[in-house]
Length: 237
Ligand code: UDP
Image (cartoon, rainbow, N blue to C red; front, side, top):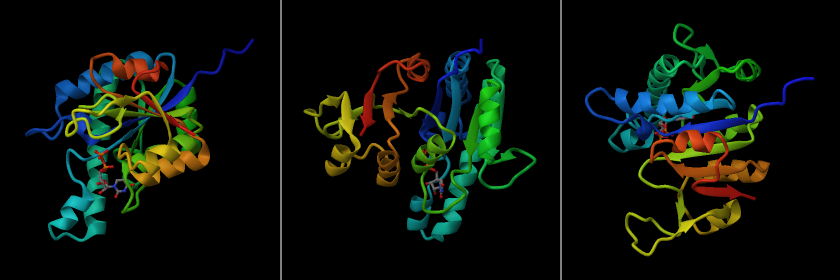
């Protein structure tokens, strides 16, 4: 008898999740995150898309006078630094890992090869996707949706800092904002709820990929989300 197939999920970690400060990444924060992921990766196949907003966001740099395309490439390179930091701490936490980059840099990461990524996942390795899509004008949220579709993940898990799901309005600005347990993509788009960018939302909507938006805090939430606990907000068709 063959062993039952493991669930496969795509976890999106924004650059903010890596902390900031003089080092760019906060080793204490990343190591805690890595321990949570490593614990869940024993029984779930985990692929990760990392953001890079703790280093650079192309749109912000271009508003300050840089060429947008070049600024976006800087943004993508920032995500690779986060990918390497996460790889290091995941390995310290006992997980086997591979980093795949959408921009060729063979000394530090494999190129993005979806079939190879799937093989790594089947072998129990955590696969970290860096450098976004390798294309300016994209966000890592959109890449999370695309990678989840391409590698056959069952859902996108979007870990957020400072907010524990989707709200009726921005909870930091509106005291009457209420948390939503389940919302459709169509309604989220119609109501202009800015949880992820609209390209990511539409890609998931058009392809029936569910998304769970949840808070990284308290400790244990990332493990719980990977293991399939119904925390935060479910966005689906
Ligand atoms: N980026 C890009 N193409 C991609 C993914 C990312 O140009 O496919 C650039 C873009 O400039 C973006 C930056 O990389 O602002 C960092 O990614 P993102 O803002 O999505 O990171 P997060 O907000 O999740 O930290």
